[in-house]
Length: 368
Image (cartoon, rainbow, N blue to C red; front, side, top):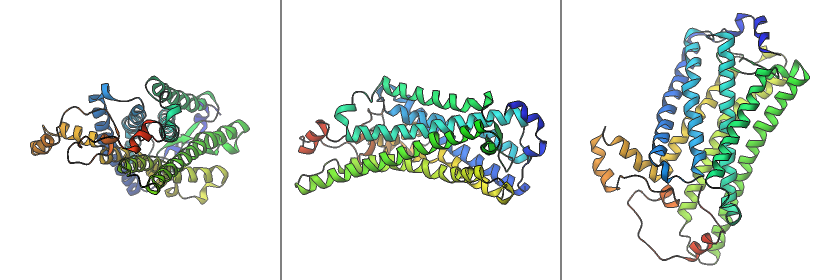
């Protein structure tokens, strides 16, 4: 089906199927998501820019995820907010394609980025000696470019007639025509590939990688305890593992309801048995994935907290004493201590332990 098929679609497809009160609630919810995401991810991007010369290569993936979340809320969601307040999709065909293409592209980028973070974290934790050199610098930049290229190419196929972008059942958003599964063989193939290759495979990679990381760290910690060796990096390992586990789990949980509902919608020919609200709540829940990553960074990352005080100091001078006590300067290069060090000042120098030597030999890595 081509974009010209929109001409044969009635205007009612772009009219909200929700009540006016529900439309306002949807609009206010998306507006809240946009405000929180722009503030949180904007701060992340500003802080990363301030310490851009000290960033390690693998941090670019976190920056890439923040860019995806920030641009999604700036470029696309305002259209959905205004449409909710007007009880109809504004712009009809053109804006529907624009919104569907953009949201699908950025959604794929977010999923691929989290999968890449999980895989790289797994390789550097379990096979640091082999992959440590490869997983830095220009190679990570190449990974980011590949992520955007693959997402852009795959999401562009509906513009060429392979599937299409259509209004969602409740009328206030646009996405891939998942019901194309019933219209033609090529559309069905696109839908199947979208779910199998670009949803299920990344999710499986995320889950398997995170489970392997937790297993590796747990086994390593038990091995040290059995030999009576003090685990000086236990706190750092736990912080890093929990942080990246939260990021990965958050994305999977946020998008799982929407994926399930879309999957059911594909194979259920009679959509009237599915209420419009059944599509709204999963869509809003998926959009919430743009919010919580900045809070995870600020909670686990001492460097981000210190830089945040530097940014807020001119606005709230009462933070001055605390900022001075924590040496509010340009952030140091990201390190295990930078991510998870206690709030109370730098640690004293100590002599290397057996665990440090083991980490240096590549048996265990605690970097991103």
